[in-house]
Length: 176
Image 1 (cartoon, rainbow, N blue to C red):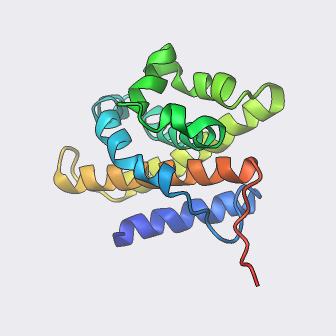
Image 2 (image 1 turned 180 degrees about the vertical axis):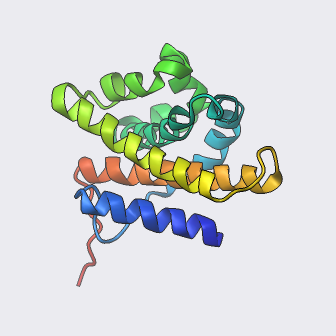
């Protein structure tokens, strides 16, 4: 993990822990973590295209993907594990622009205050990272800008999965 990605991780973890969305120990779910590379490869063309005009969506949607994959893992991983393009599977239900609503409504089954609170939380995480990216003062379109963007997406995916695992009752506690 690069120094930047560690800083992103620490910032998101502190924020989400302060909201009671994470345990002291991060969850260990290799099945979900292993999906990162294929999801990112599929997501990047859409995410990069949308970042200039809709940075919050470009960043936040990856956190929703992490939550969706964690939920799929919990419910019926055998049905989803071999999906050739899990990102496209989620995106194509309603399209990129409405992917957040699809995940909240259909995958996570949220309504009312819970629906709105999750939107606010993901929005805050995306805003924090967009602010961090802009403060880096790296030239758009450069390798450094790409690497910073991917580091943000990676941590948003992992944190989304961790939050969802926590919400479903998975607790990482040291056994004595």
